[in-house]
Image (tube, rainbow, N blue to C red):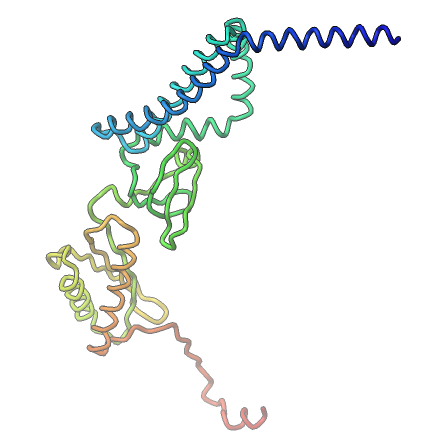
Length: 295
């Protein structure tokens, strides 16, 4: 038993010595491989920046430029890895890696279906001209300004300054409302006045107020004023007009400003904006004094 242990120990030492000899022999190649790897990492960053500068002269969207720059950076690193395998005389290992790449790629694809779907959707979004940085959009029940589009998600900044990261797949598969597509946005305001009001006077005062305050509204015909119906406590109308803005936030501000202006004008002209009221009809024989005494 002792002799067997000694023999095994000697074989292990011999094997370690052979490995050490191989390391010493290949040490220059190993050092060169490390240097090449570091150079490849540094070169990938500089090449990515250079590609971005060159693409800035093109009409591609910013998101697409970033995608192309990242892909070029990855290609530079892969070329460096192939060069390292050649320096270390690992050609056979390279053939083995390439042979197993198909099976490994299939397994990785099945495991990363969601991530790959977001990546593919990110590339699609980068080609869409109607969705770009700075646009104010509404999608998947979220609304805000687009501040980033990468291979994973679309980042929007909401009115409250919070960031929302929406997976690219959801943005591609669901409707997108882009407020920045046109140069103007419509303000829609609903209100109501009391039944005792002069409806023609109400319409004139409301339209004049909008025309006099908003520069984008040049004439009265640009304002759409529609009576909608007789409500429980008021006669309701809808007011529509355009403003020079592509931001939903600016639309909300214009709507708020319009509400204040209309309220001031109505107060000066004794026009009532009623709140819901309830009228109680009591029988003629109903005696308030007797009922209050009983209570």
